[in-house]
Image (cartoon, rainbow, N blue to C red; front, side, top):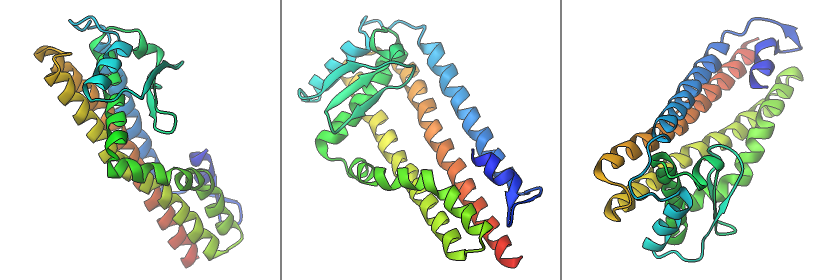
Length: 241
């Protein structure tokens, strides 16, 4: 939708070539590369069975208990890599590719989600901030582009500015997400290693899986920053016109 908005319409609806599209395309390429890498890395280590023979669900339970967490339920959720921790309901949901799998990839993904539960238990600052930003970020991601282009079409500079500010809220959410995800992976790797859940060779694979997953968040932030730059450039060009 973002590409269709900005690729064809500007000002009063005139068709034109938008040179700022290159920024959106660069962001798209970065996101595709990161996504391809995480899928390839997960697929590789999803074929390697962890020596302890634990499923993702069993590993999650063990990691949680080792961290002194007993009030978080581990549940199954449909989909591939749809794993997430819900701090509101204290539920850790593991996907089809993680819940019943005994692979190294499944164990480290489950442990990563446990890392978020550990953050919640300790009231980790960036996680608290990210949870607070969710409503504003959702509003920003949904309304930023429509408001921005409405401002261009009707030549309302304040509306253009509102669109940019709304998009900044979504970018801020992604920025705060980075330390949350990196910290969760760090906690996961530490407890997997110290708890002997994965062996030394398996830990190397776990680091690669989590590193590849982290790069998807870096790529998403880079893409959003490029989109923000694009909005600013379009707004300035509109002012000159």
